[in-house]
Image (cartoon, rainbow, N blue to C red; front, side, top):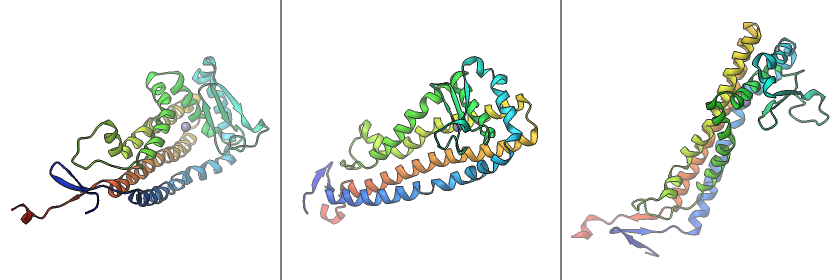
Length: 261
Ligand SMILES: [Zn+2]
C-alpha cells in the first residue's frame, strides 16, 4: 500500500492531487448544471413584466402618488423616471427597477413598469422604517458574498479522516451548502417583505382590487426567482462539497475480521 497511515487504529490512504483535480472537474460541472436551471425560475416573472408595459397607464398615477401616501417622500426617498435617462440599460428599457438605499433612490421606467414600483417602495420602507426589515436589508449583500465564499470552501480538500475531531473550519466545510442557502435567506425574506408592504401601500393609495390581484401575481413570480436563487445555490454548493468529500477524504481500509485473530 502506498503512503497509507494509521489513525485511531484504522488504516487510511490519503488522497492525491489527481484525486482533487478529478473532484474539482466533476464538482464544477455538476454545480454549473444546477446553476444553469436558474433562468427557468426567472422566466415567468420576466414574461409578465414585459406584458405589463402595455397596461402601465393603469398603475402609473397611483404609483407616483404612493410616494406621498407612504410618507417616504418626507424621509428623502425619490423616484427617478429612467425613461429620461440617456444611458441605455435595463432600468431605462423597463426590464428592471431597483431601490438604492444609500441614495434613497428608486430607479424605474415609470412609462413601462410602474407596477413594480410599489415593491421598490416596499424596499425603501424595509430600509427606513421598522427594525427587522432594516436588519434584513443590511444582511443582504454580506449574505450574497458569504454564499459565494461557500462555493470556494466546497472545493477545499478534506484531508482529515471522517473519524478525526472537527474544528470550526471543518464544520464550515461539512455544512457549506446549508450555510450558503441560509446566507441567502435574508435576501429572500426581505424581498417577500418588500412585496407585502408594496401591495399594502397600493391598497392604501386606492388602486383597484383587480389591479392589486394582477400585481400580486407578478410579485409572486418575482419571489420565485429569489427562492430559486437560494435553493439552486445551496444545492450547487452542497453537491460540490459532497463530490470533493468523496474524492479527497482519506479512504479507510477495512481490515478483514480474521486478520485480527
Ligand atoms: Zn426587490
